[in-house]
Image 1 (cartoon, rainbow, N blue to C red):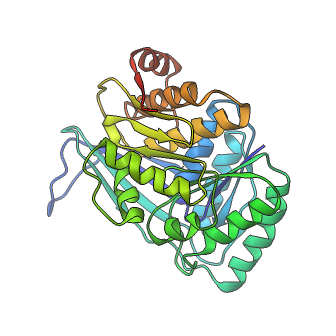
Image 2: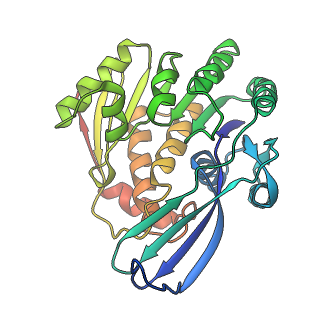
Length: 309
């Protein structure tokens, strides 16, 4: 069983429009409400790949019930801590001219008792799980070291943790030594504290984090693919060019494949190539989490992998 954590989930209202015009009336041609948040996006991909998943975090109000129901519909288990306030809604507007505009709510305030309740529940869930994935931002009221506390709980249970977050929560969590982190280039720059001008800079920054106790650093760089560095291996994987429709959730596809690869003992090289293929395929679809297997296979064959060791 894989445990995914989303501390600031959302209902993602994904809409299409011919062209977004600021300051004017915009009529959407299509809208869909989807369960969202980075950990939930990971859950959706894992379920599409037939993995057993238990999703946890905070949920509240009608939006929370919608997310819980949708997770159950897709066959995932749901073990969220209930909160008094309403789970947020995010707006994702996809226009035909190729632009994607995201309007993200900050999320509800989490009370001290709700934070305590979650950690107690999380400890029990970790013991029932093979591997843990912690993804996304933290809701208001949650301390910057909250992820670090969660990682310590995982260490006590001798479980591997994959972490995908940003800012101060990422900085503090690194001190707790998760097994793998997946920052994008901008997030890696924030952690290191300097601009990363080229691939060599990215590799050097990753090696700094390896020295702090991280086992695997995967830096995603959008259409340029990703760079992965461990103590013994280093790779760059580049996907072919694809027509981008919706980039939301592409990084979560990478996390989902990395999780499956680690859980199943697959080679790092093979896992990385699959991760890039699934991520690139996901940006060609309107709805994140619904990906054509044929498209994944097509991109996998064309993806290039370079040994940087």
